[in-house]
Length: 177
Image 1 (spheres, rainbow, N blue to C red):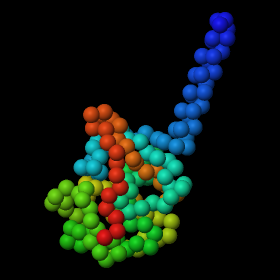
Image 2: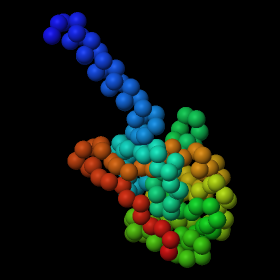
Image 3: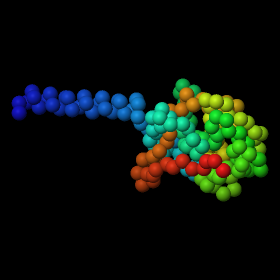
């Protein structure tokens, strides 16, 4: 094989790899770095995880999903879906209620403290989100966040890959009582 032909093969292979990487990054998957402790103990600060960007193009957000959304153009947040359109969410006596039934939340650490939150109905096209570390989470209880438009969802978190010794699949938990 001539040097010129081999150089072309290498160049073509590199270009194909770059195009594939861009397509994957733009349309399929995104890496997200966890900043802060709002999802502790489920996720830890500085963990890196994969986000499925197609999850809500082909399906609907569900209670228990952990999602990344655009909080503002320079900042993304990661939280857990607690209510979807039409659901009524409230917090009373340290218990989250979904449609007037206690929500099963096995991912919360024992003794999780939450302040009471009056019942709200999630409007169409929106979701209600909470962090798992309820006493240290800027989430839908905060008027700066409020209900989050489904259009702001970047995707569903599904795999922690860094640090490698803590790699794991992220499962949706909780859900209808």
